[in-house]
Length: 504
Ligand code: BES
Ligand code: MN
Ligand code: ZN
Image (tube, rainbow, N blue to C red):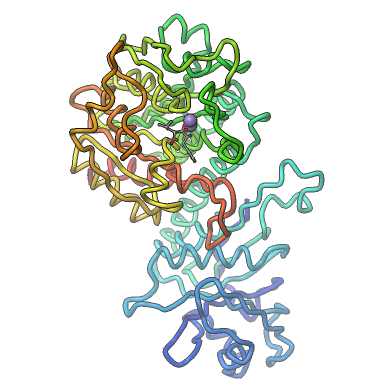
């Protein structure tokens, strides 16, 4: 990952490959953002007009380079990069604007060793936002290329933030928090981007075991034998067509001062072919991403442990590969789920809810106060909310609002959705307790209603359907790369922090 630091150096004296300034879109042309004063001085106060002459407007994401030799030459760095921040509200930058600025800065500096960022960062939250954006925006996934980008592992090696009070303890702590969270988000991205012939339930579980050792949480893996003994019919039913048997992984993090608890459950289908209800070509190209929920849960628990949050957390990774074969579950089969309920599988492509149902039932045995599941569950959710926004379904209106609010504060777009009573009937089966598909209309909602059946009474539950934002097939922007995005890690960490400090 990019190395991030705070420095009291002036932009003029910093030895770096470039100095980055923020460029604001003003009413009468671009304006250099606060913190860039020394750089302006080096250009005899003409920097904004030089940039404007080069076509810069200050629009968000725009980058413009100026060699410092044309200025007074009093900067040690050879180039100034102006990164557009867009228009600014009267009360200053919002945090999402700062995260995007950080991300755009890192991407503009691709290939450089060291850049200094001359932007005023007056409070720890602003330091955290720019640092997080930079660490996320510098993300590169080149593990499977013959030649990696000089083995850099990040777009730019080192980013120095010049505009914060570098000796301020709170600023340093904010930088540390940003690095911990960014590392978890980037790890979730790596897992999502890893090709399905290189990640299967067993190897995913092994990665969880390693992380637990490194960061101080307990990891217990149930293999196919343990799952059979425990009668986890949902996970086994989904995994039985694959050469790679399923796993259920329990992550346990406890804190001595914790009074509250939350369970996090992630869908971890390492490849979703659809099973015998096979997906058509085109719909299966990105289905390595169907474990993004489990990746988010693993990333979140690692970050929560490293941040030492005073809350007890269990994480559950429901890992299976959904494949067609002579041993695969057939449309028409009835599975006996963990806990004893039966489900008629009418479509083997509605597999996420089957693995999650077992994991949710198991998670509830430990009486968590709250439970959040995260899943790339339905294409219908993408039809409803698009590619950037995840849906939130819950059995508790206050908790749904709290989750939405936590997501909002971290800059992850989400939207609350209902559980219309009449949709429950569409899950009635003629031969079993439930069937695994409801009516087509409102498919994202009936999937949530199916999961709700497995949540124990008294547990506040929310379901995040991240099918849209988990994988970016569109353009790179701000701090969001192509491919795996690591979505939901930040929301889950924020939620755990809110539970720890009693806000929720
Ligand atoms: N993993 C898919 C959902 C998905 C689709 C995620 C596209 C990301 C992008 C899920 O397992 C699935 O196949 N859902 C079906 C459910 C249907 C059969 C009721 C779907 O949405 O079509
Ligand atoms: Mn599926
Ligand atoms: Zn799936």
